[in-house]
Length: 112
Image (cartoon, rainbow, N blue to C red; front, side, top):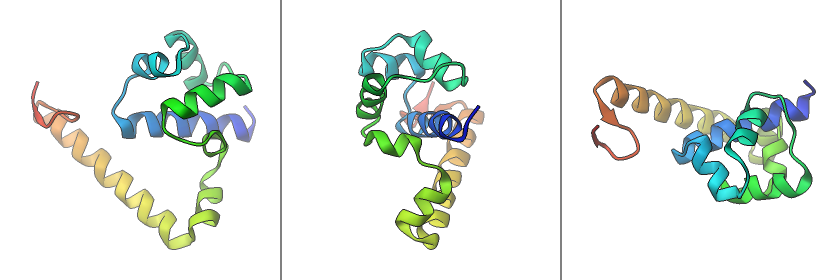
C-alpha cells in the first residue's frame, strides 16, 4: 500500500472514531455503501475523487486532510500543536476505553 493510501485509511478511521460514528453511519452520511467504507478502511479499495469528497464532507473535513500524513499536520500546525493533538486524542481514547470497561456508552455518557 502506498503512503497516500495508508494516510487515507488512518485518517478515515481516526476521524470517524473521533466523531463516534460507525462505518455504517459514515456510509449513510456519505451516500456510499457500508461495504465500500469497510473495504477502504481495510486498505483494499481507494475511492474516486467524487467519493473522497463525499467521505470528507461526511467527516466535516476538506478532502485533502484525509490524505495528509502526521508530518503534514505537524508542518501545518507547528510541532507543539502536533504533540498536543496526539495527547488529546490519546486521552479521549483512554477515557472511552475506561467507559467501555465500566459498561458505559462512551458516546452518551450513561450505562448501556
